[in-house]
Structure formats: C-alpha cells, structure tokens
Image 1: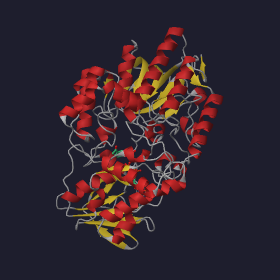
Image 2: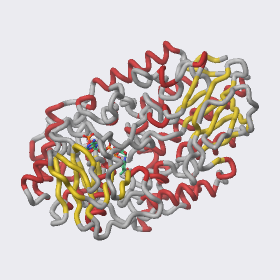
Image 3: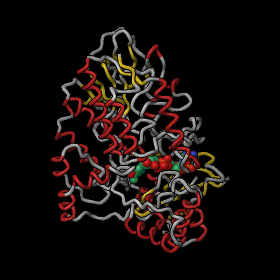
Image 4: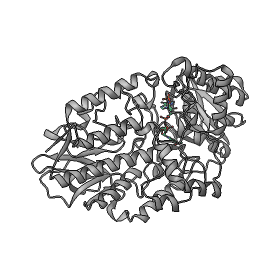
Length: 538
Ligand code: N01
C-alpha cells in the first residue's frame, strides 16, 4: 500500500503503539496499561504468540527449558501454569501465550490480522503517524517495535520456484491445519534448528525424505522428558531462588557454568565433562568450559567430541562424515534435537550435499542438483529468517527530516543499547540489534527491555519530557563496543544469521550484543539512573 497523505486525520490517537503481540508485545501492552497510558498493539497474525503462532512445523518446540522460558513478572501466573515437558512443544507454548492474553485481558487492545506498513515521525506534532495494510491511520507519541528477531522468513532465490507442481512449505509459515506427509516423497532444504526438529517427524510419515544440506550443524540431544508433578511443585516452591540463579548468568538460563579452560584438564576429564552434559541434554553443553567461544584450540575439543558422537550414531560412514560440521563449535546457533542423527539410519532417508554444488533449480517434478533430478510431492524450505532487522526494515520507518531507517542502517543496524536509534525519536525496539536478545533466554530478556521502556515512559511523563532520542555519539560508542566484544570471540568466523550471512547482500555485522545479560543490564540501569544518559531529551 502507498504512503498516505500525512495531513489526513488519524482514526485512532494513542500514547503508545506497540507493533507485534508475541511475548514482547503482550507484556509491553500490559505494562503500558499499568502506567495508565493509552496503548494499542497491532499484530499481523490472527492471534497472539508471535514466533509460536507462526512456527507450527512438526516437532517444533523450544530448546529453552519451559520452567524458565516463561514470564516471571507475575508470581501468580508462574505458579498457576503447569508445563508438562522439560522442553515445551509449540502448541503448549501457544496455549500459554493465549492464557496470558486472557488472564490480563489483552485482546481488547490488540488489532489482529493487521500489518504495520509505515511509521512517520512528525517533528512539529512530536508524534508518529502509523499506517497499516488494513488502511488504518493511527497517531501515537511513542512506538515500540516488538516485531521479533526471527520473524521474517526467507526462501532462497532458486530458479524455477514457480515451476514446481507439488506443495511448498516454509517452516516459519506453517499451515495452521498441519500437513500430512503420509505416503509422500518429501525434500527438505536446510539443516538449522527448525529442520533438525522437523526432519525426524517428517521421516516417520513420509514414504521418502531427502535432506539437502549446505552446511552441517552441531546438534546436541535435548534429553526431553515429561515433567514430574512433584518436581514441578518443588521447583515452584523455589521459583524465586531458581529465577535469581538464571538471572545472574550471561544467557539468563539456569546453567551450571564450568569456570575452567577446556585446555586446563586432561583429555579424559574433558571428555567426561562433555559426556556428562551430553547426557543432561540441551544448551548446557555450551558452558562445558569457559573458553569454548574464545579459544580455537579449546573449541576444537568440543567440536571433535560432537563429531565422534555423530560417527557413533550414524551407521553409514559417508553420511556420518557429511553430517560432521567443521565450523567453530557454537559459531552458528547450537541445535538441540530428539533423534536427528538417528533419522539418517532409516531406509527412507537420504542426505544430499549442496555445500559444494548448490540446488540448481526447481522443476515441475522436484529439483536438480549437479545435473541429477530429485522428484518430490512436497518441498519444505527450512531456510530460516532475515534475522533481527528483517521485520523492522519491512516497515517504512521515517524519522527526523524524513530519514529512512533503511538508509540509516544501510551498512548494518546501529542502535543505542538495542533500545533506541539516533534520528528516530520516541521509537523503541525490544530485543533489537546491539542488545543481547537472541543469545539469551528470550522471555526474561524481553521482560528486562519491557520494564526498562515502561520505566522510561513513566519517567518522561512525570518530568514532562515530550521526546527521547539516542544521542549519535553515545550510539556510535555503544556500537563500537558491541563490535569490539564480538571480535574477541570465535562467533565472527562462520557464515551465520548472527552476521546476516544467510541473506544475500546483507551487511556483515554481528548483530546481538555478546557480553552477556549482567553487564548489559547494569549498563541499562546506570543509563536510567543518570537521567537516561546518552539519550537526548526534548
Ligand atoms: O534457520 P537457520 P532455522 N540452499 O538459518 C539452509 C531459532 N529457532 O529456522 O547454514 C541450501 O538456522 C542454511 O544453510 P547454511 C534459533 O535461534 C529456535 O533453522 O546457511 N540450504 C541452514 O542450514 C535458530 O538458529 C528453535 O549454509 C540453504 C538452513 O537453511 C533460528 O531460529 C527452533 C539455502 C537455515 O537455518 C533459525 O533457525 C527453530 C540454500 N539456498 C528455530 N538457504 C528452538 O527453540 C539457506 N539454507 C528449538
């Protein structure tokens, strides 16, 4: 839709427009109401839940532990909700999101099935005008972008996509009614977290499954299991203490962090530590030693441990070697599975390397790689997202003097604390670039941002301040610091979505802030305590 005449009268006036009604948007709305502000959330989906509304592929579940991947802001809420598995499945997380929406009566202030298309700052009025694909015209003093970090699905530009006569799916836009693959020949493109969860499930249904792998990933077992009600009751009795423990870690997860170097112990002791964590299951493997992300030699010990696991699980040696990753361990997001490697022992599953020879094109019957045609009834793109900036830049955002955010971020995103952007007054991002976001347990991290923004808006109102905007010098200094910390790690050494490498033409910038939540939180608190130091107040 085209940008409307900015002089036309808005149909709704608010104090704050929140874009998105996932876990970030829902809590933001709740806190804004608590401040007595008039707030409205705009959501593209027909329901709440964000990521968990869209990602309904078979096997979708969170790889953060459910007792911790949940809100902690309301003790009654965390006491009354009962998680049934160590890692919750997508339908359970979506039910939880709906429960939260009902419990706090959020839906009356959410406009569903509506996508924000443009937001324009009016310097004279000191307000934002917002347009949507439903033709709404809204005005607000502040805008909060709660659009999610992995919410803009991408399909690779492969020739002939429209030629294929079978069904095509993307894991991030899965049909609500589900897909029955029984008796079908299925191709899956991609081997990231989504594919690794979907592949074992699809393999059980399909007549045959062919996986097209460009880069193998490190995968550790979830060791998922039902939660015992007695265990849940015990954890709930100690929830405050457990949450505080998680809060103090870099990622906001309840991980036992080994303070030793992987190179300071014998090989036997090192492998014993890896084996212990492999058996515990999940992302706790990442904290086996303190230098896995900073020291290449230490990193290689973890990498080789996982490769040996793959060689032990996968029967066919050639397939096992193809599945062995050679990037630095943990450079790409570590994947957590239930039966992923075992799936390659099934007679109906095969792996095709497209790292050396890419998928050439889709044909009416399937796709071709290196001159060989593979015939399919259905193709699943598990090809990921334009992460962290994709959903923000889809909106035509214009700040002071008509500055387009797309232009301001032409060389990569630049934001102060991942919360505000110079040139864009009264605009906040939740879990935005240059904040810890995707490197942490997202729901508690969302809570920290929402609470900081709510406190800020309350403070501005009490002081009679109309505008707040990141100071360009403070922003540059924060971005430089964020980049400098990233350079001390091995995370820049591979082509991950963290650096935008999965999107052709996207500037290569390590987008999240990697120094961890405690350091980040202290900085945010100090900025607020100093009267929002580094922001210009008007
Ligand atoms: O996406 P991805 P995802 N030809 O970008 C491949 C979170 N998440 O949806 O590595 C062939 O990781 C691409 O190959 P390469 C989590 O943070 C969490 O799986 O770029 N292949 C890669 O293998 C995760 O990291 C959970 O070489 C192509 C795959 O597609 C993030 O979301 C569950 C290709 C994309 O993997 C994204 O995960 C799911 C091409 N042209 C997701 N283009 C849990 O909590 C791309 N690929 C469990």
